[in-house]
Image (tube, rainbow, N blue to C red):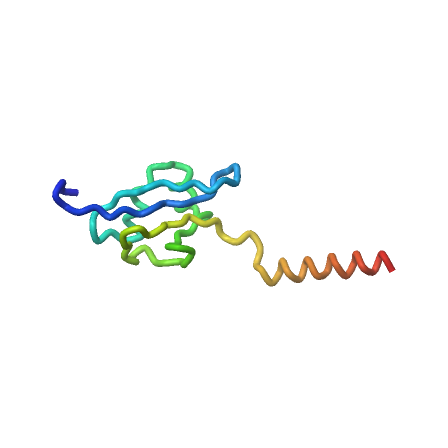
Length: 105
């Protein structure tokens, strides 16, 4: 990056192992993409999570491809993938409720 080239300032967000939201500023060259932001991450655990597919990237909560352009002030979020399909989880909760109600009756 040349010194006279304008910077793009975005925010990197993720949830750490303790469940706390971590926000970190990230400066990129003008015209950077989501893929450029991901390549600039210098934290091994986050890089490994992305490579292994445990983490996915979004901009303001919306999943985007690596080619998506970034804009000043964007928040790049690293999100954990779903552990259980929401429909399956809902069915399991409903079954537990049915069993609980049946044992009370």
